[in-house]
Image 1 (cartoon, chains in turn blue, red):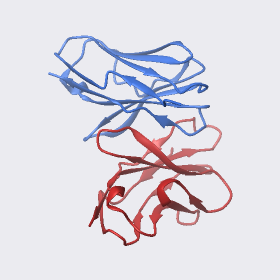
Image 2: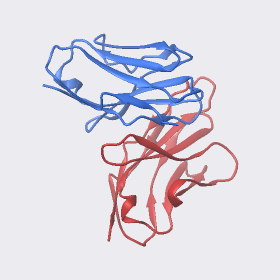
Image 3: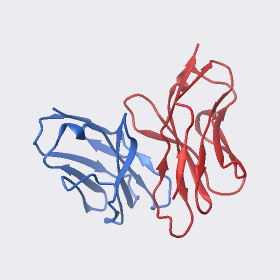
Length: 113
Length: 116
């Protein structure tokens, strides 16, 4: 199994631009979690899905952030418009259920100038 | 509410010596406890978990962790450290109390430095 796949691995963009991060779940998993990691705030859960349905999005910073699961194996996290304070490493993780072990992708390192 | 504390930002140990990375937790019900490791520029990698049963849990790369309910701790241990164990280690907890939700709460991480 290839594990959780994230793209792009690195993204540099200018303030105000739209950013889309992508995540492919491990085959057979049905829960998807988006995290953000920064030096100041550590690892934060942004949103998670179960069976394509968003369960808890209380960690999403503001309306500029949105996440979707258009199908059972794929998710996107969009930031529009992006701001410098959004610079972070964004991870997605998948699991076989919302109570099962989460397996993380390699992350997308985002830099907003 | 559930919480996790990793009291040490960094742990330094010489290669070949035993290592311990500390973790304490707070939950309303019973805990599910996890350890993850993060190597530079990589995602978090699952090491081990405690759900129920034996308090000593064995995981990947020779790591183990001991669940201590009275001390609400889940310290990560390894009998003999390797330089390649140098990384960032995260403890995480999920509360099994009915109304606790299903989220994992992560500690702030402990950087382990193993010196030759």
